[in-house]
Image 1: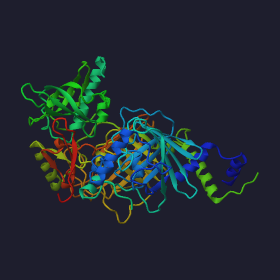
Image 2: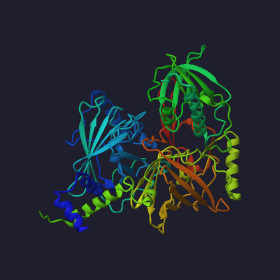
Image 3: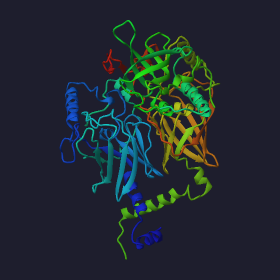
Image 4: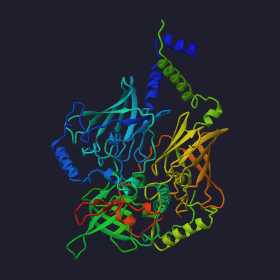
Length: 230
Length: 143
Length: 266
């Protein structure tokens, strides 16, 4: 083994593919989201650049939610939150790598998505909540571009609207302290006057597991479909 | 929308629809819809629910003598099934004038499952029940 | 040139080299047996199974099936775990549908089902824990016998029906699945043995087959997104917990539809 390592190092460093593999080795596994505000903020701490129409929709939803009406939020009846919202909820997820695919397996009601790492073209008949993600590496950063996202979900818990033309770009990388960072870029000219970026971080927890969460059983007991951040 | 089909494709479609109809109804009793009948209604699309496990069209059907149109709920199969039948999410839109051949609900309510939808321009979309004629769903079916 | 290699870097490099080597095995024609043990990919069940015939139902099992049949014959719509959007893993063994993705690492198989949406984890060369919380998906451990993956599952919660007649299962259920990939790699043959002395007088075995479906994309099955009033009129619930909590009610005239939810105690 040491002989092999010496050969690799003397050749001037690892090939890109192996470098990706070593980053991937540290990306896989269970991640626990760190709290994010219910009203999503850009990386500059500001409200996203909503169009007038979108701002009116958002304000109305914020008011309704404060009055106890979350009927604009389909997670209320255990329908899927979609991307990016499912990564912004207080439930762990797990990254699993298998050949040319990366799976994100979530701890909320059996949702998952499979990211094509082989550079395939997303082909879809209709938009879905998790969309059609395609990933590639840029150095140490995993970049996932997703199209085909439906307009029936909200970006955040407070009800940020989105269209089915939206393009979501995620940049996942490991921070020096070992946490995972995901920077989301939202491009959706129907509701936002410019592309904007938000950020979420995730930490390791050796006790965290992805269980079989069955949302209908929880709401049947009178618990919320999506918990609050603790 | 649907273009003209070869005989082969039509036969394939018939097999596909029969299988899908079985699958869609596998957990339901045969009593929900009367597959021996075909009812034709015309109206305006009020809402499209492109959803799992069943999608629906809400259609306002004007009756000659009454002032208020009657709202019909028409089941049109799941998105995955409809995609295979050539539907897109916006194939039918709010405000479209449509003619619907349906298998009606047994209980006589304003409810049915789609056989054939005809748009104003004459183009057609099939529903899961297009090929189902009064079949009983019993016994094992496997290929 | 010499570098001081940290232990962490060495581990990462070693992992990368091992991973690269194992990733090459299926395509570069490594040993035939390791290729036969590669179940990764997109698969599609062959055939369409909604009824499991000739099961050795005991008196208790027959009573359940008869009750279900009577309800359906009287015109009611039967609601099972599947139709109430909380299917058990056993239902996807007996009635596999649509596309199924298998992700495979050295430690486990992760099986991602399109419809109904479900995730099964099969830990390789592991034991069932002593204290197991019953769940819809159970707890699965697998090991290789030659090129056959034998998966043993227990810890089911009894809320799962085997088929469209609602053949029951109990928390005593144990399943043994044997996955064998064909020599040409195009199919997985699966033999499933079901053992549930509460409802069946002896174990019984069924066969299923999955064929390779590379290049195809799973649809999304968001089972709870539109629970309609019509689905629950004239309903018969195999278990009370299958009752809906929310329902879509159509608006009058041009009024849009809305969701109405009840909570415990209402």
